[in-house]
Length: 543
Image (cartoon, rainbow, N blue to C red; front, side):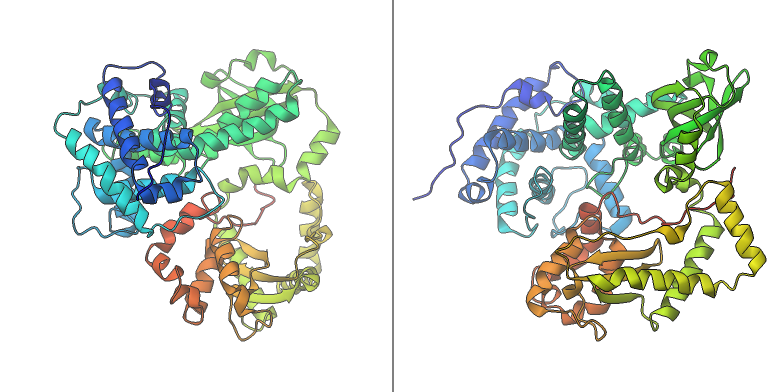
């Protein structure tokens, strides 16, 4: 006898509106609410769904029904949300979707494979305790049940014109704040990305409220958190930022598409006030010494700045060739201790690293470091070590690299003088702290970033020079390598390219099925670190 999953409550309009960019119901919402409840009904009648969904409460089941129905409404209404994802996936991988057979797939219509994928995405996004295999037969069976509801409604489902209006922008819009609002809508008020982005926002807000509950600056910190996520959050889908999805949604022919793509990351930190004219305020980033012109169109506090070298804490973003104020702001008198601290802070200086990452100097430095690493490590880009020897290995390599530069005494003195003038601490002061329960580690030279240290994954590498490989730990270490966001994609691909044939996980295990879509999955698992950036900070570059 089949058991049916019992759900006590219907889905109500307030549940449905959580997936909308507006707060009050529009004329089509009651229609789609009925579809939501039909979707919930067929899902809860499925025995296999009960087996997997026992991890979720009724609120989450309601959210899944609203989420899938929002996809249906999106296709009917032509809002271009889902189509944007399919279009980008096609551009990257020459197919519309990962994982599933697409022989019977129809562009511009609802598809079983899409509902299957969206259900998998939902399951793996609203929780991260377990990874649900996309090839579990349940997803296809559940999609078939949901498609029966959608097929019945396809011919008479109404378009939601109110919804579509939130995903359009005026062709002549120049205001940064209109663009920022559009990005915020895409990230936090859109069904496809909201299930991913909103929990991140809420989790960080909860941490801030707990820490600053009685602080008069509580709202300052909350607003700053929202603004930072608008500019920096990457979605699990393809590791895109909000501005990249905004560019896709407005479409290829829209004149603002390139402006969205060229919008800079946000720089937030301490600056020195250096003067102003009729159009701009001149500020200098303390940590790096780089100077910026902040447009007065975005800044209402210019008349309060009177004294040169007043300290300003501010966020700035480049939009359409100008630097705009974004986030929060306060000012304080000059403080030499704060200035000294900021100049010595690698973290503060890293705020502007993206301005130099395309420079030939960074590329050349990484090539020099890589050559030195290969010479130092007997031609291999990876070294396997007990944890206790990792720090010594790194220090010995850095000393080897410095000697390989063959700098004259004059060049060494000039380098030390540049470091001294900019207030930087000498690199050889660096030390490493490792958790006591780690036994093994590795050092990998990542050609995109530099040296990368990783611990307790050595059994993912059955290589001749790895004495710490243990077959019984292999699958556990591989899964850590794949899913740990702090581990680079480059190290994962080194493992796959060099070790795949010797690893049962990739030959007879689930990993065999992942390989065709491994890049998509790496973007999903490592969204914030998928795009590896150089761990290099340049000095002496002020522009």
